[in-house]
Length: 454
Ligand SMILES: *[C@@H]1O[C@H](CO)[C@@H](O)[C@H](O)[C@H]1NC(C)=O
Ligand SMILES: *[C@@H]1O[C@H](CO)[C@@H](O)[C@H](O)[C@H]1NC(C)=O
Image (tube, rainbow, N blue to C red; front, top):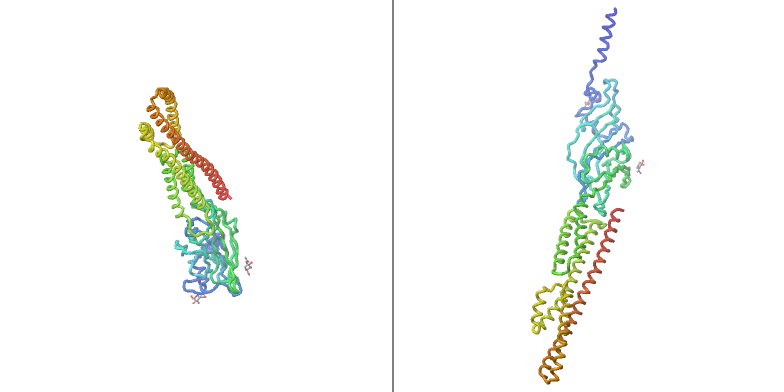
């Protein structure tokens, strides 16, 4: 008796536990086959006035590239959608508790969602399956590389923050037929994206925010979900590659004011620095788009610094011109009176005419001249004596000599006045320009960095 009960129990439990269900049983129950077009053709509602509610979620996996030149933004996103298919339902209890079945994506109807900003077809591999649930909910996931267009404001490049939008909507179904809702709100999407974000590269992900929009055309309205992705550029590379070198060149140009004005070395130095900057400007041309409604600060930065350095180059040329003028005075002086004072001509020529020494040369000339005058005075007295002795011939000779000397001394004074005048002017211009230049550079740099920071 006992044995029979046990046997019965064993048979009964065996029968329940060993009822085998397969996913195919569910599909057979639903009559969901590849050639059954009932599930594919129309929006899955039993009453046509029902709206299909699509819940969407987007998570940002990676920022693949941001190209300012072509204004494209390429994120890698994970998008998931869920909606209700009213033709699908089964009782999980009848199928050993199966409440979800994965089926190929092309077996049933899907909402015709598309991304408005997408400019290239996504060619990344597709996930071929989706889930259907016993109550008719369909879950569909997709990883995709979105090549989207994004209007970027590069005014503050490279300290800029960009906002790119991804708008998702139905291509033909209006708001009465398909409603779109975000599955997770902005802060949840931001948090999820932060957690899964793999590569950010040059860009730092700030946040993702989601909004509903209604787009109306004639008397129809379509609903859109707009995801706004905010990203911030990491400026370090551009600072090291671009901003700092230009600053270095500028400081070199400032330092070149302390190079002696002579010999044209300063001019060569400044021209070299200016050329180096223009090479850097070529790099800028590669990065920035040519169309832009607001001039990028970096362009202002380059152009103003370039202009300042050009100005300082022109100033150096002017100063050199003034110095040249001074040495020309000296040359002409020595050329006129070299015959009479051959020894001095030689002496001065060996001095190389350094503009720095010009003043000294002039002074020493005067000194020598006045010394000679002093030396001559006793001679004059001697001549006076000999004049009394009636040697008028010697007197005339010496008078002639004195006249020449007087003339020479006058010319020396002219030389000194003209030369010292131009040297003086050159030095004054140099000093004033240096002060002006330093103040302008400081003002400009602080202004532009404030603007960049704001
Ligand atoms: C299942 O679908 C096929 C068409 O693919 C149809 O001929 C058949 O009658 C359907 N069966 C049921 C039970 O609805
Ligand atoms: C869009 O239109 C629908 C239906 O008229 C409405 O319920 C919804 O609030 C609208 N959304 C916005 C953002 O205006």
